[in-house]
Image (cartoon, rainbow, N blue to C red):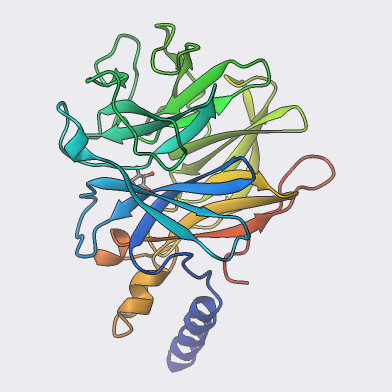
Length: 312
Ligand code: FUB
């Protein structure tokens, strides 16, 4: 018994002494959506409050880097205070550039997705609709839990797609104006063990749909079209010590990166607290005071992606 306890303690120590560091330390950040605009990498995360004991987020900051080492916080780019139609849960956002404008998609109230627009990737963004772009009661939406986690993707033919949902993946085709859609809601397969945090990217002509699964592992599948069907490929990242690990995948300066979050900044700031493990993250503030990080992603020759080891 004592032997296995010693082994476990040592294992935990090794796990956490090697875990990935937060890329910003002055605030808690989660759900990082990384994008490249004009040779600069921008990250659009959620902002977990310093004293959070639940997902009570209220605004969004934008961060940028040109060397993957030094990060600039551009400050608040959009806030719940800017909305007349929602006042809770400023969760995982995403952003994309098109025709000289930047479109910031964000979930609120666990039931609505909004869009805000700016001339700059750092904002300030403005709500052009004064209402949600799509919400849980919109015609065609199927979502058996929260309606969250928008992720935007523009294909090579210029068609833009917005994915969102929890447990069920809803996808819409955005119109050219990026602030409306064609009225139809598509539903992607429910057989992939999808939980939340969908991300779409294209590599070598194939569509990669990655997501946090019901086992809290980050998984991915590949298809020949942005709306599927998709074939399951495997796990990209094991469960994190924060319970959630919402990610994004981006190519920058010839390298591919996986951005995600863990609870390492919380444990760094609270050394008296014993960390949970990825599989058993436990209950506590670490689940709501998260920190974004990233690692390189490596493709195999056949287009599959090597599993990331977050402890190396
Ligand atoms: O940050 C709030 C929620 O936690 C996100 O919407 C999920 O993806 C999870 O990371």
